[in-house]
Length: 170
Picture 1 (tube, rainbow, N blue to C red):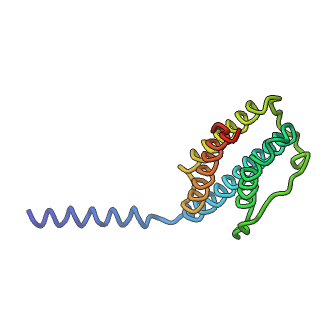
Picture 2: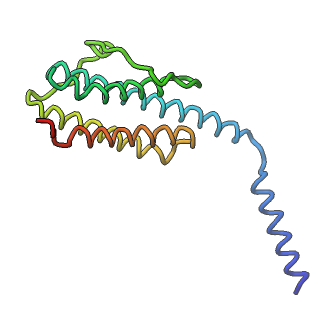
Picture 3: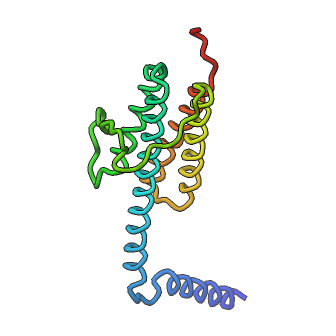
């Protein structure tokens, strides 16, 4: 009985070693290359989404100048997100910002509701969609990028709260 158990355990261990070591056909290198492409794609999406949010902030301020002071810190955070997602292998400075451009880099600015409350609601909805997209991307992101996506998604959720809370100063 002991000999049979030893043979089974030994055979199982050899099978596990064979599975773990496997025959190397370059699939490890291919997975790493695919992972690098995936990370680049997630970073590009993050930059694109943050840039779109930045354009929405700018369009909202253009349409409702009275909201400029309230939106300035949120816009600044969103500009930092663009800088973080576009930084290649280096940490952008904490004070990195993206300059304001009337054409948002050649793109048309988003349509903004004429009513200021509706404009804030539209901005909050855009922030929520972006945060949800980033949260969903966590499932396939490698750890370092997942931390960044989670942090930026949490920031977006905080922006939603700040954009939808009642103005107590009036």
